[in-house]
Length: 292
Image (tube, rainbow, N blue to C red; front, side):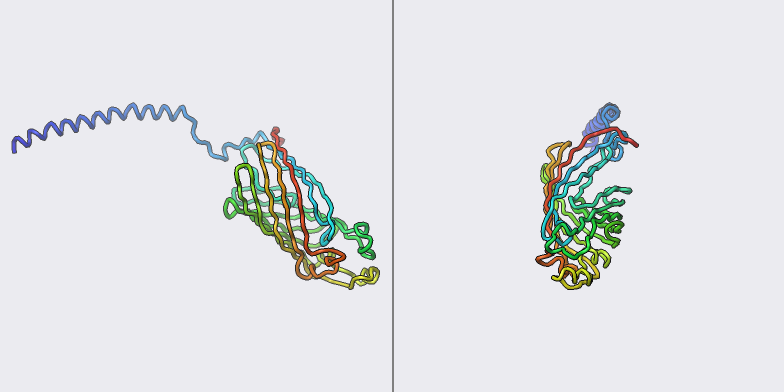
């Protein structure tokens, strides 16, 4: 028993000396870690990287082939500009080619809301003198309103708009859309459904036939639709080779449904309930000092 007690004492001494050595070694290590923490930059939150003094301005030009007027069977080319402004560090939001002109008043990672506006091409006698004889012109329309977007997940965008006609027609219209986003290297694919609705005032303006118009034209009967709705889809692909340029090609299809789809104005030879659109968009981005 005495020999066992003597032989275990050196083991305890070695253990104590080893622990002391570890403690001594850890002191300069902790000191060096503190020094490195003071030298190396810390990760900066995304919101702190936004530079409020610099804007990224994206100027876009689009050209598209669309029906000459709602329900038309022939097409026309339409070109228009658009602009997007964001501060350096803010991610650029996805924008579908068929979105209305919009301005965000509130913008978070998953939700944004603000005013929007759309323009609806008019229907004029000169567009089709053979078939539109006797019909009153339906002037192009201006539709201001409100939009809201929600991202349930990062790769799905949903958007809803409600608008009021103030010129051309005085109806209330709305649209609902969803886009599935598929990024592949420098390409971004998007595709999703589209739904549009309108009240009786809108439907009668573009798809109604009054008794006087029917009598003058002689080829149609009076028609009084009380609503409008359509359904379809739109797909797009955007190529972004660098931070300055981006190129988008897109195509969409919509079918006019319900009582508006039964209007003689969207049946041959006057029109077509199947509506297509094709287009190209070029984006150019540059930086400038913020104006406010």
